[in-house]
Image (cartoon, rainbow, N blue to C red; front, side, top):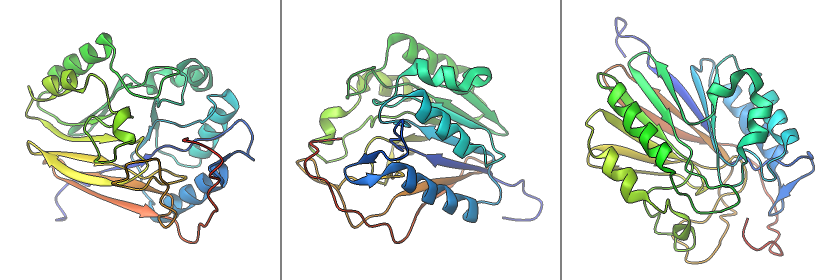
Length: 270
């Protein structure tokens, strides 16, 4: 970056923490509180400057206010504002009860930052696993994209809007993804679409738009698997973005080291 160029917007994505009401809670044998602490310690070490933190769903496993309150406390160690969206394990009301004066930081919402607009969408259906956008959510997307012309746009959701070539996970894709893409394809200023849910990283292009999934802060799902499978050799992590004023994106995934756990196979699914 040249000296006269503005600094890029530094965005950190934290996703699929699966916290429980108790700090003893484990997902498939991994203590999710401990793994989140390790990931956030890595964020603290690697990211001296953060402009925005995105929490892209499945913040809690049991949708309790205790879990959301602890998550909020964890993020308070950073000076950057955080914006949350719901995953299939989350319930909106306990999150709103936790955010209190910052309820506008929960999806659907739009983050305005320099040359960028980040649109946070709720793809979840409460008490169901697959995603599906409500008509009002799609209307919000359409309106927000219209209003953001002249800016670069990142769209965030929880569920994957395209298959991941992972047969069991792809039964949980956004059910009405074709309506989502019909709106997306109307606009040329969208630079990236980002999601969680799949507990694995991916990076591809569709019509010039960057499509990115990110690792969980706890267990990782094995890519290209027909049946439910955990990737025991891949550690928890997070993703960071540098969003440049010209629309360019730089992004990397960073993972913690030395996290080993024994999968509890008595748990069917997650």
